[in-house]
Amino acid sequence: MGVAVVVVVVVVVVVVVVAVVVVVVVVVVAVVVVVVIVVVIVTVVVVVVVVVVVVVVVVVVVIVVVEVLVAMSFGHAKLHLQQAMIDDMSRTRPADQDLFSCHVAHSHHMTRPCHVAHPIHYGMRPSRISLYSACASVNSCF
Image (cartoon, rainbow, N blue to C red; front, side, top):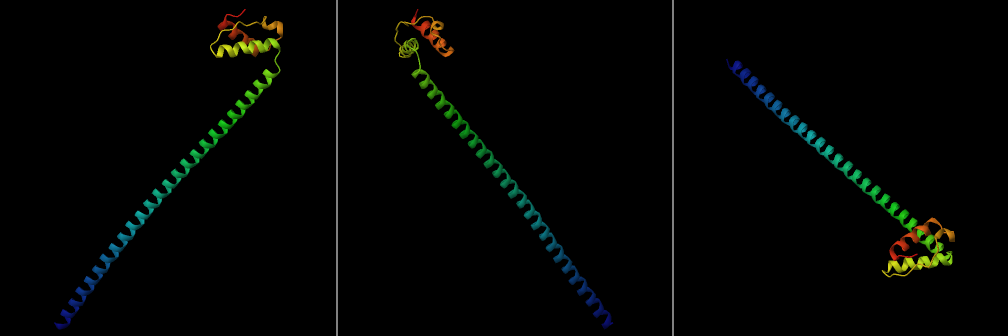
């Protein structure tokens, strides 16, 4: 009977040790699985945030570059237009000069008769004709 008791005790001890080992292994595996899941979630979140930040930065840079290029092209075009107007006025005939003076007088809220004949008689360009019309309508010229 002494041997039977020893066998029973050994079996109980082995079962308890195996049970403890199984519980420890299950807990360790569960912890590893949770850690892996957390690492995957954190990695996905970080990747998404980085992608969103990169996309936003690229979009902002593209918008700024496009706005700068558009502003430069408008500034360049405006500069060309101003230079063309200066060049144009430096080549005007006397009637055009008088008409330009009338336009300037109108822009300063003054009235001055336009001493100009019909624009076509002076061979005015269409821009001069429209200036003549504006000046004549405001100042009751001609």
